[in-house]
Image 1 (cartoon, rainbow, N blue to C red):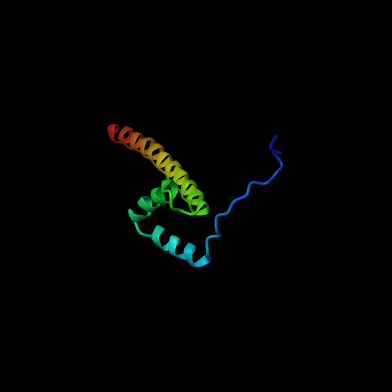
Image 2 (cartoon, rainbow, N blue to C red; image 1 turned 45 degrees about the vertical axis):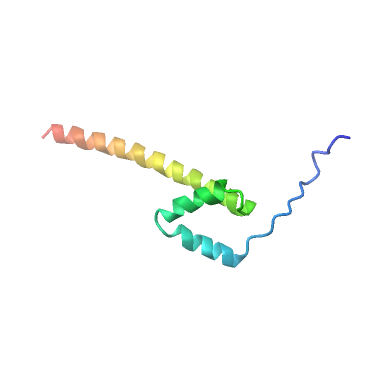
Length: 87
């Protein structure tokens, strides 16, 4: 029997409560711990799927920020060194 592709997928995961989100945001405000916890939530087996998806999205934004920061640092570093060599 074929499965209808229009049938919604049953997801039995519980909704993350507001108090859990408040605690999550508090943990994410702590430097270094935030990155560690994002990896734990994103790739750990015990995390709520909603929190895991949030953590994966946050890690993607962290990666985008790092790439942009490195690019901007290289551009401005090169411009600074070129400016210093003209003095």
